[in-house]
Amino acid sequence: MTDSLTMRLARPAEDARVTEILEDGKRSIARFGIAQWQNGYPGIESVRADIARGACYVAEDADGVLLGTLALLDGIDAEYCRAQVPWLTGNPFEGEDGEPVRYLAIHRCATAAAALKRGVMGFMFARSEEIARAQGKASIRIDTHPGNRAMRAFLSKLGYTELGAFDLTQKGAAETDLTRIAFEKLV
Image 1: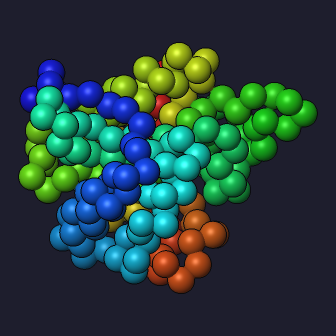
Image 2: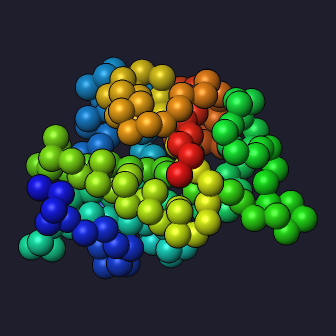
């Protein structure tokens, strides 16, 4: 399946399809009985912002069907700066005094329901690691809800190190359960 996939930046006209894929992800998370992503976030506004900043990637098959999405963000992640976990790369305030940020962060990743168990997200994470290396980054960071057992197992399988729990501070009313587990992988 993954031999026929490509990963590229999403186009503005694809915002509705990317949002549909995220909605599939929300339904998958809901099966675990946790509140992550169950109150409107992420929505089309998040997708449009990611597309505008050149951070929204999609996986498409040979027929041009979009099967997965993730936001691959460069720059200081304020939540990760505040997180009191033993990051594998420098923290808390990388990038000060012109020092480059040494990691990319993956957020808002999901696979279309019709493509589950077909390696789409593994393919996207592998391509993200290639992008990070090409940009001279040392690692990729990501977080997930403690109850998202599937994502935690997936990240461990891909070689991400589980670093500990922290509480988000900036999700506001969109998220009610703010505890997350931090992961990082050196690339």
